[in-house]
Image 1 (tube, helix red, strand yellow):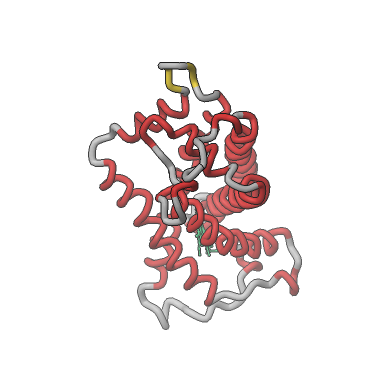
Image 2 (cartoon, rainbow, N blue to C red):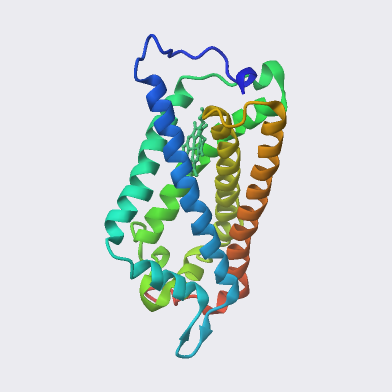
Length: 238
Ligand code: HEM
C-alpha cells in the first residue's frame, strides 16, 4: 500500500517505539476482527426466530452459552474491550499523522486507504451508540436484556426508530465489515505474509469473501428485526 501513504510525520528515528506500536495496533485489529466475525455470525441467528413457548430460539441459546462461560468479564475485558480501546486510540493517532493521497493518485488502493479511515470514524460513533445503548446508558428502551429476553430486547433496540433500523445499523455494519476485510488485507502486507502481487490478489479474494459473508450475516440480523418486529419487548413506560 506504499502509494497510498504520503511521507509519514513520524519515523523509526523520531519515535523508537513506533514500529512496535504499529504491530500492536495491527494485532489488536486482528483480534477484535475475529471477535466481530463471531459476533455477526451469532447475530445472524436472529433470522431463525424467537423459538416457541418454553423453547428458547437459537439466538437466545447462543447468548445463554456465552453468559454461562466462566471468567466472562475477564474474557470480555481482555479480548474485546482492551484490544478495541488500544486499536481505537492508536488508530486516531495514525489518522492524525497521515495524509490521504486520493486526490493525487485516485488508485483503487488509495480509495481503500481513504475508506479505511472514513469507516474508522464511522465506527467510533457507531460503537459508542451500539455498546452504550445495549448497556443502557441511553435509557431502558435501547438496553439489551440478556436473560430470557435477548431476542425481544434486540428487536426493540434496532426497531426503536426507522432511522436506527434503516440508516444507523446498515451503515454501521457496512463500516465494520469493510474496515475488517480491508484491514485483514492490509495486515497480510504489514506482517509480510503476502509479499508477491499474486499472493496479495489471492488474499484479496479471500478478504472479499469475508466482506460479503460478514455483510450478509449483519444484514440478515437487521432483516430479522423487521420480520419479527411484533416480538419486540414493549417500550418501557408504555
Ligand atoms: C469493528 C471494529 C474494528 C476492527 C475489526 C478493526 C480492525 C482493523 C484491522 C484488522 C486493521 C488492519 C491492521 C493492519 O494494517 O495491520 C485495521 C486498521 C486500521 N484501523 Fe481498525 N478496526 C476496528 C475499529 C477501528 C476504530 C474504531 C478505529 C478508530 C480510529 C480504527 C482505526 C484504524 C486505522 C486508522 C487503521 C489503518 C492503519 C493503517 O493503515 O496502517 N479501527 N483495523
